[in-house]
Length: 109
Ligand SMILES: [Zn+2]
Ligand SMILES: [Zn+2]
Image (cartoon, rainbow, N blue to C red):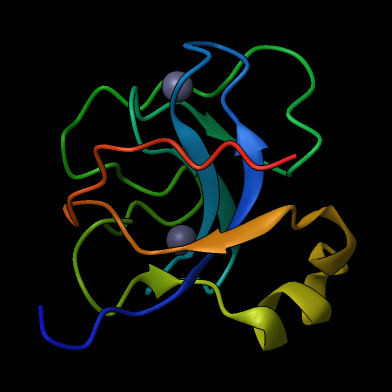
């Protein structure tokens, strides 16, 4: 906890409206998925069009290879990953990962 990593946000979840969206790199197949912090809705890309993929299991199994998107070696995507898949332009901000306390909203214009 002393060294929080930085994650890159794509904005807020269309489904619940409050959860930040960020990309996880699957530890199994290395595909990137966009996941909501709040409701665990998952999308195949950061445009988040259509209905999210429902991953009912708390380990969020990858829809492609079934590896957990929560457990290592799955990890948050960094800018190099996002550049690789062409999502870097979708990044709207950076922040600290889930579990770090944030009780003030960062509403700067
Ligand atoms: Zn959500
Ligand atoms: Zn996978």
